[in-house]
Length: 438
Image: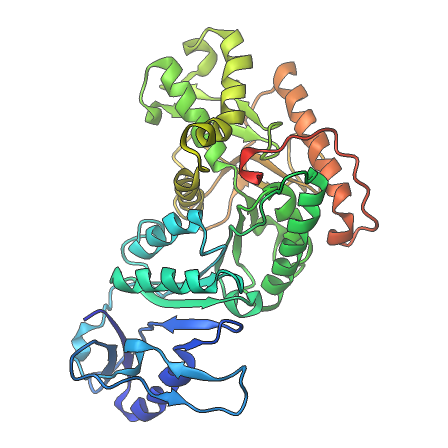
């Protein structure tokens, strides 16, 4: 069959109890878990495996006096069979734990299967997925877990689902924070900042309490730059440098437009930076970008197109997609999350860089400190990064960067009550909402 747990024969009885109490379906108001875990074993070990068969007995119910703790064995996880110890995948790496919020949504529906397949962290990297939803989405989350089970990914060792971030973020080494409330009719951007800011403040506290001390956090839910700032401010025990706001989709869109204009395939486009906020003040940088190793302005000599049409196309690409398709760019967002993670876990190609929204303290560009701003970065592949220093600015680029900086500083003042910096004062310079916020 499909999934297995290696356990020493001497602990089989104890382990069966563990399956019935921990790897179980729990009521929708508390954590749901499905676990598939592999552990080192000796030659005398047995394997506890989930297998379906006509002879399988119905799941047994574990009795408890506390209704909130009441649980029952879930499906095939109740069944144990002896297999050969030699089936252990000894060449695989130590399992990593990845927590995902908004896991019942469209973006996660594309992303989770990429994570489970090995496409993101590699074909020899076992993974535990911990999926965060809400009371309203918990049944959908069960369906997601069922699809992950049925896909038989050999690298997928655990699937846990729940609605409590303090449980779902436990020991997380990566936290992908996708879930956020959409902007409703008549809602001001300031209102969206407050509503989603409260979500990310709570998630920051949960990460601070239970996640790995070196957890890498990628914030996707909009407004992602300021949500990332709120999150890191509420997680003082985690390095601020570990928090990212996703601007990789904007970078990918910029590369696409430059490739189309130059008549080349997109892999010929490099050194593209998205500066600033993930909003319509974002700055796609064509000054430092290259095509076939040459500066973009030497290949595309239409300056008016670069300064006007190119920038607007990148900024409004998501809105055009919604108009044409009637839905948001969930699939390409999931791809960009994959790209963002890969940029941190694989060495950056020589001479190139990538865009990500990061904490500005100590930046070499003169951008205001204590905000999360998209900037050019490089990585050695260890999950860390450094800011690129060899970039140039002209008046056009710098003036646009300062406009995005002003917007992020205003957003920061608007959420001061969520970052521990006093009373919120909302003086946003304008409504620069992206379509995905609706």
